[in-house]
Length: 489
Image 1: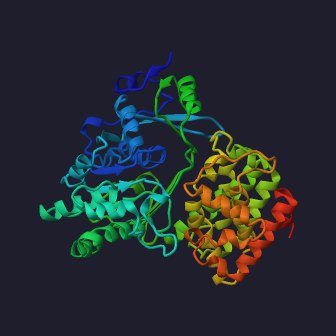
Image 2: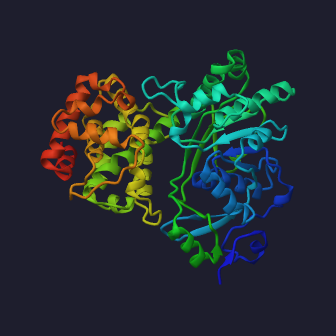
Image 3: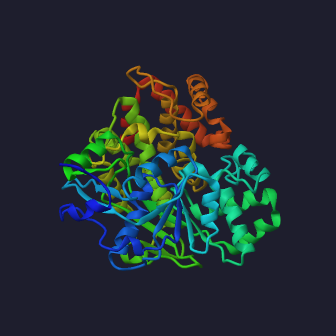
C-alpha cells in the first residue's frame, strides 16, 4: 500500500529505493536556490544528495526560495513531505527511484524573507533556475533590457524589489554595509554564458539606481558560468501515479527525468563551494565551448524536431524520433550545418555527443512532449538557433537547413497543423507571430522583419532568400516533401 512521503517513511522503503543515508538535521544550508522547479530537483539537488551520501560537503545544503505564485504551491507541497523529493530516472532498461534530502529549508514567497537570508552570513552561494527568458535580455542588442517594466519598477523602488535581481542587489548592499563578503551568484539556467548574463542583469539593474554600487558589484561578486543538462519533463498525474503504483510512495511533487545528467562549471567560487567533482560534475577554466556544444546540438536539436513534428501530428518526442523522416532531418541538420560552427574541445567527440543526443531524445520512458518543445519560440529561437545561423553566415557556411528550421517555426506560428487542426497559443508574442507568419505566405520577409526576435537578420540576403524559398515550399509542398528534399540534397 502506498504511503505519503515524509521523513518517517524513509526507513520503511525497500532497499531498491535510494534514501538519504546522512543526517539531514546536521546539514547547513549555505546555498540559497531561487526556482525550485523540476529541473533543479533533478539536477543540482541530486548532485548534492549524492555528495552528502559520500560524507562530503555537509555545509552545502539547499535553502529553497521563489518569487512567483507557483513557487508558493511548490513550497506547500514540499513542506508537507519534509522537503523530500522522489526522483525517478527513466531508463528504458528499468526505472529507478531515489528520495533526495539535500534541501533542508524553503523560505516563504516573501521578498523580505529572501533578502534577509541572502544577506545572512550563512549564505555563501545564491543560485537560480528561473528559465532562459528570465534574465531581462534585450533581443536586439543582447544587452540588459533596462526598459523592461520589471526593471524600471525595481530601479525606482530599490528598497522594495520584486524581482530576484533586485533582491540580490539589496542583499549585497546589506552584506557590504555589514562587513560580509559577497556571496557567489551561480546561474543554473540554460543559456549561453549564463554567469555573464546574470552579471549583466544584476549590474545593469544596480546601475539604474546606484552606479557606484554597480561598479562595486562588478568588481567584487563572482558569477561563474555553467552548462547544465538533464531532460526533465513536467510532472503530471502520470508521474504521480507512476511513483505511487511502482514505488509505493505518495509524492505530490515527484520528478521524473532521464538517467543522463551533466554539469560543467567555471571554477570561480571565492566563498567556497561543494566538492561536486566527486559526484561527476566538471570544473573547467572556460565553459563557453561546452555551452555552445550543448546549446547548439541539444537545444538546437530540440528546436529542429519540435515544429515539423507538431505540424505532421506527433505528440511525444520519442514517437517523433521513431519517424525516420524526423530522425534523419535532425541528424542531417546537426552534421551538415550545426556542428561545423563549433570549435574543437580537447577530449570531446562531437559525433559521439550527437549520437548520444539522438539516443536521449528517443527514450520512450521520458514521455517528453512536442508541445513542450514548441513553447516560447520567440525566446528560444534567438538563443538556440539564430546565433548558429549568424555564426554560419559569418564563416561562409551553409544555412539552408537553419533557414528551413526557421521556416518550420513560421509555418507553425500560422496557427494550424497540416491536417488543419488549430495550434493552441503557447508564446507571449503569439498574436504578433501569427500575423507575421500569415503575411509571410505572400511576403516571406514579413516574418524575419520582427526585429525583437531576428534583429537585422532580414537584411542578410543569403539567409532571407533561403528562408523565402523554404517557407514558400512548405506551403506549396508540405513538410514531408521539404524535409525529404533537404535530407537528400
